[in-house]
Every structure is written in structure tokens, then in C-alpha cells.
Image (cartoon, rainbow, N blue to C red; front, top):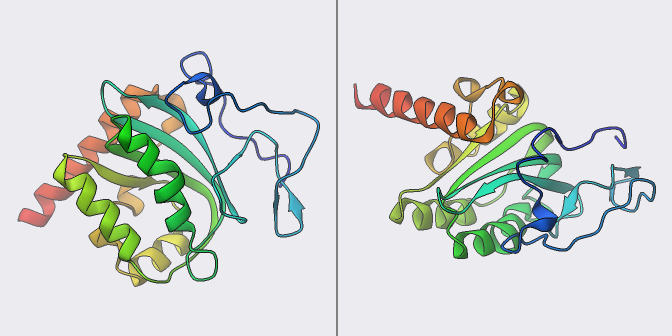
Length: 193
């Protein structure tokens, strides 16, 4: 687990610890000292904690003028025991929304498990974003994570599923947003038919 690093090829375009609007502004990282863990496994020190003991993130890119952020997620998403969605919404999304972010793309290929509980934070986040023309889209979720999300009826509030599998590493952040929004438009058309 300690070998899994956040994606770093966009660092020429954006670094969250250098962004005065970021919740992680001025954060200092070590390449050698491992302190964060998921259960008994140390993880790479570049991952950022937002309050959950099992789920971490990295803000890969944020554009406040265009109103979007791309976050890579890592670990176990556990709403049942840890209430991870509360930490994500309160400690990360809300401060970013106050700075103008309304579109959240969560890269979830390293979310190894998802355990659902109540959907009230998802509903609240969805309603707040819907009022300002925003959304939450999870891309590249693993099949068993998709199944758990769908079984919890979170597709009412968050976009995810096989249709949202993207080869995002070959794209720049604006292209990722364009690709996600193209998928959102296609899904909306399919639902309307």
C-alpha cells in the first residue's frame, strides 16, 4: 500500500499545498517518513488526510474560475462506521465550494471498498450543487464498489458506473472535465428517452 502514490504528472499545472484557496495550503510532505495508515498498512506520505482514518485524497487540480476540482481518492470508503462522506463534505468539499468549486470529479480507482450507511450527506451535497449548476462524478470505480453504490441508491445524487470509466491519465484536467460532462450529457439524454 505504501507504494501507491497520488498521480503526479499534473504537478506542473497545480499543487494543492501551494494553492492559497486549498484546504491543504502550506502542507509539508515527507518522502521518507510514513505516518498515515489504513488499518495496519502505512500509505505513501503524499496522500492527504481530511478526517477519515481509512480514506485519503489528493487534490490533483482545482480551477476556481471554471469551478471544478479533480480529486484522487485512496483507501476504504466507510460511511457505515467512519461516516467518511461527512468528513469529505465538511472538511474538503465545503471549503472548496466557498471558493467557487461546484463540479467535483472523484477518481475512485483506488477506492478498494465502499460501505454505505445513510444517504443524507450525499443528498445535501447534491442539492447544494444542483442549485449552482454543479455535480459530483466518480470515475473509474471498481465493479464491486459500483454495485455497493448502486445498491445504496447513491446514483440519485452522484454520477458513477461503467459509463464513467475514463483513460484520464492521457488527458489534461480541462479535457477530463470535458469528457465527464460529455458523459453526463449522454446519460441525461438516455434518461430522457
